[in-house]
Image (cartoon, rainbow, N blue to C red):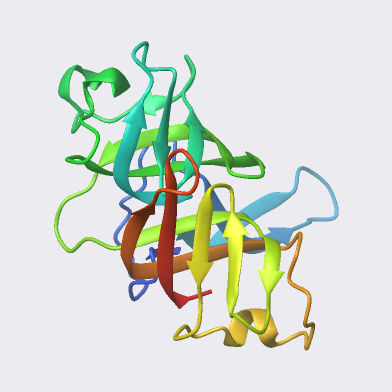
Amino acid sequence: SNALYCFDGEPCSTENSLKLGMVALVKGTALSPPEGSVTRVANTIIYEETVEGLVQSVDPDGSSLVILGQFVVVNQKTVIDESIPGRLVRNLKPGVDHIQVSGLVAGDGHILATLVMRRSGTLHYEVQGIIRNHDAIGKRFEIGQLVVDYSSADVSDITAGDTVNWNDRLVHVRGDEWQPRSQVPYGATLWAARV
């Protein structure tokens, strides 16, 4: 009841904008009385979408889609927001609809969606995933079919450990510009602002 809600890098507030299906990080305390059950109190609830961007493709049966080179699996437990026509993923239009997905990174470039919703307002692009093919000299790495160029990005969070090889690290990347990449099916390039 007294938690701060922190959404998508915006300033934290006491306004609860959580939706069913959002994967959130809860920071809090556990109070253990001498007898009885433990009471857990949330202090901060943090939400960042797993991937946000323009739809690149949608499977005709609505069981999957591709966003920013990430293969997103939709199943019967995925919450489809009312912002999507008929609450059906197959109604999304590639190259037109900008959406955000909350979910679980299930492997290299694979996400199991827990919530899919349409995005409006100021558009930006985000992805969470496992780094592979890190090129420290070229300042690039890959997540699924996405090449991330971080030459102009704030990387202070990831360089804090002083490690040169970033491969196999789970990261959250945010950028304001992307484009399709024709070298691979549904490939993309993202120019990162923050890693």
